[in-house]
Amino acid sequence: MVLPGVVWLILFFYIPVAGNIVAVKNYRLSCEGLIHSLQTSEWIGLDNFKFLFPSNDAYIITRNTILYNGGFI
Image 1: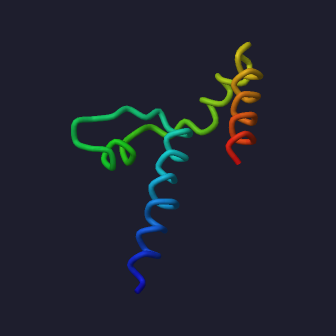
Image 2 (image 1 turned 60 degrees about the horizontal axis):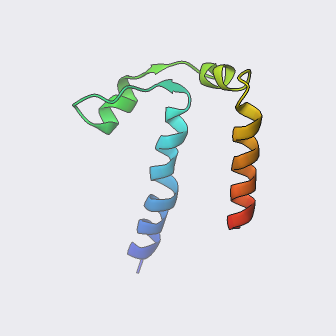
């Protein structure tokens, strides 16, 4: 009876968390697999966001993300 809940938890919580980690690492996929790549990538903090937001496209990217999410909800 617990199996559907565990599957739901893994699919909708644990797997997307890997995407959050990639945002703050200098992620490079290695031939040893996804987990090894996440563990060995250099931690760079918010440098990816410091690169994104001063760009001219940051407003358009943010606007499109909000509009798409609002449209699909």
